[in-house]
Length: 203
Image (tube, rainbow, N blue to C red; front, side):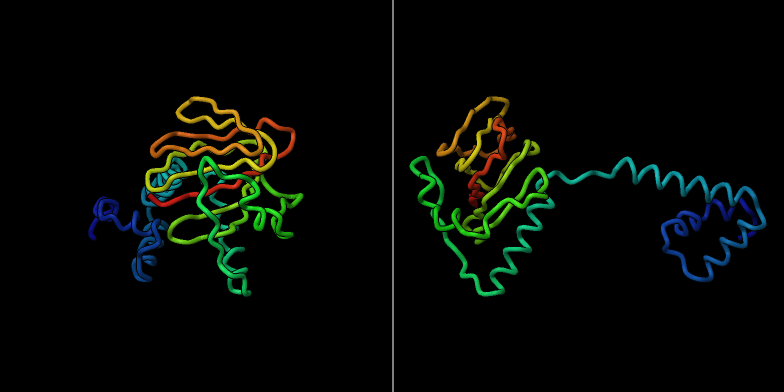
């Protein structure tokens, strides 16, 4: 490269910032920066632009991601340690809390004192459905499902489930199924966390 302008226009500074240059190219960039202030300034501008772009496109995963990952790890460990995979019945309008007592009443199905807003314990994970006991302290993030039906059976506490903006007030023993493609959010209305049996059933 014969001139500083050619060097600036070559794209090597962008590659350097992205960490995809080799040792020879790294040495060339560092040498040019030490000799030419305009190269050093352009390198700084590119770095700041990349940081700014990363910040604009960054997103915070919703509140269900971490607890679901942790619940999946916990469930996998339990199966590895000898727990027999369960097949609880699919929730429907005739379901009762007693139908699921063998899972609800287990000694390991409890809410830890230091739990976050949402805490999940899986009781089954198979191709037909994921079944879990979920504790919600305040509310869930808004969600929409296109490939699975989400079903709720309220076990303890109370909540409002808003489906496409329409409020449904639920108490223990109430069942609700969320239609596909419907925006929904759960807001707790009791002084204690709302404990629900949740199923996500494949379409």
